Length: 118
Image: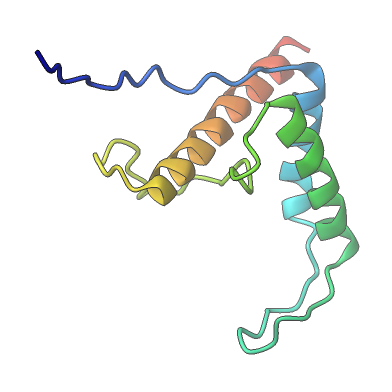
């Protein structure tokens, strides 16, 4: 007799380490220090500013610390006010972006909690 299996969404589990919070804190700060000119969509070559180079270095640390899969790139996406995390789409790209936004929120809450303790 065939069965219908329903996948269980267990939610996102993010290992929160001191190193992950350090990397995430640096990444948030570096977002505001970017001095890159606007990118021309017709030109694929561009130079990154030093803040962007550092941001990507910290991104690699954060990706390792949070045990992201190689295709979860970038591993965090800053959520906007009009994001809908439970829109019901099963598109893999949508699922990856939703997880990256959830990861950002989890790390942001943990960063604020540790800052409040200090």
